[in-house]
Length: 355
Image 1: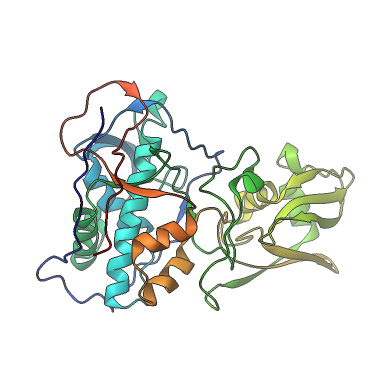
Image 2: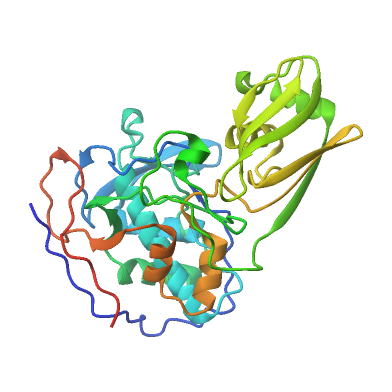
């Protein structure tokens, strides 16, 4: 079945939408957990804009599964994942629309990821973050709802299939190929690109005593060094300057991917320690000193860079195409979908936003 899209002639804000320049919503966005991305999404029942999705959320210390319409889920994901701090009103609108398209695309491509656990998507960074909209101020809810309505049904595709719309908080100036970060093939749309924004990327430092780091490394077989830890050497970097291969020299000397080392360290000391693999590491007396730039895995869309582009007036569809090579924006069918286990199908015609 070929889906006939609604061609959009332009964007109109809701009447009465408040001024947004003073709003701040900060999130260290990072969809998704390190999975090998594929441009052939899982075989799932074809969703529509009215598809019901089952989301596992945390209520206190208790896990709960809730059922939401896809478009209602998008609102909660935009609120949890969007980065809107310090933007002009127009840029806030643009970034919210962009995040709505990312959230919808990721949900469609990964619907049923947790089917064996009787829900479709989780609500943390293993999938993408979702929070109930009522947890946020009314003005922010209006922003997210407007973004979902104005991009209703729009997803990012490559070769007629929804992409794995991975994104992260801060690339540090350059994104990386997905295959370099996690291994395996790199989908054509997840190639390394130079970030279009300058002087917006955050630097970070992390110092840790040798013994504490050694103990943490010994918790994982991939990084086990035994009774001593002498040095850590980055022996290979990718085009973005990320640590691709790292040798950890101790009683044992494992060689691991930079992202594996980062995952092991952050599992013990938190996500804000080794914020990215774009780092240098030195031994200073009894401490290892890490210094770097960026935050997150560095694959796909860079939120900090996207914010800077939006502040310059770049429309969201152009920002998407900067970070995802060769993609199209297409629209899910609005009416009833046949229920069969097959890849999502969209129209052969690209949705237009350019008038």
